[in-house]
Length: 286
Image (tube, rainbow, N blue to C red; front, side, top):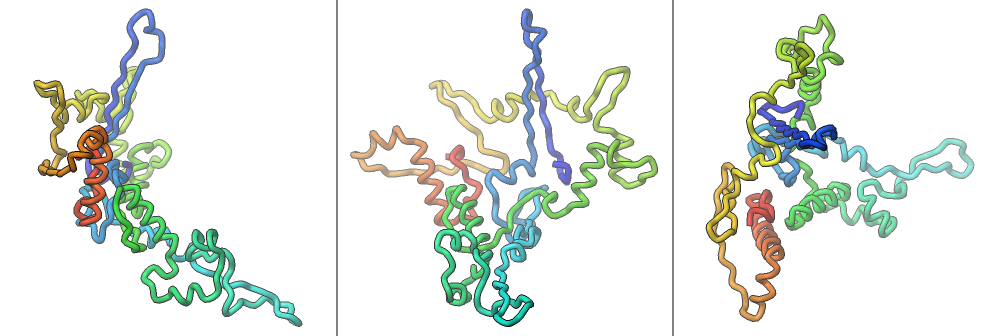
């Protein structure tokens, strides 16, 4: 949130108990909202920044975290007979094989295995492939056998300076010196996040909303029908699409009591057909 380039909202609601419990600590709730907070709900694959929501960047985790260097195979070193200095083997790798430590742990090291896989796109990237597979499976999507870890993430992930500027605005007392003339520090000094006037502490931004945090977006998104059931509005920028499913008569009774299973089946089928199109589809949307 510190590195956000678009508004990120924090909603706070505090309520003190009525007498005779008014001496107890107040109950409170905090709701965060914004583009960055939706980054992991779910993780979204991307190729360019245009694939991501506003406020998010297309970050190549492989490149930024230098995973290829971390999971690079190293050759075994040994001291040849009759010599005192170590040499590096030309054919034997250290165990486990860092390019695919998961497989090495399960199946051990097999001579020639790496050479036989060198023609594969995922050669030397077993860990990246496993991470991508896991993220897609957690999102009810199919595995595609790729190793790319380009994801829509907050700019904080690859823009350290933006993150530092956000921190300077948030805690200028610690990160901004008296003679610091950087834009972030000047903004923080001219419009501080926290102000104390006559013993009253004011947090910038909270006075600008009258929303109740515990009901934020919920009551406005749902409306009760005359039959007692609830309607849910489509999320911003999206609309509902009608879907029909045919169920064999012999399965009707059991199927109608397993609505969650039906939702997951629909989501899994759509994502299997076109994951890029449906990757942000969640059970609540069905």
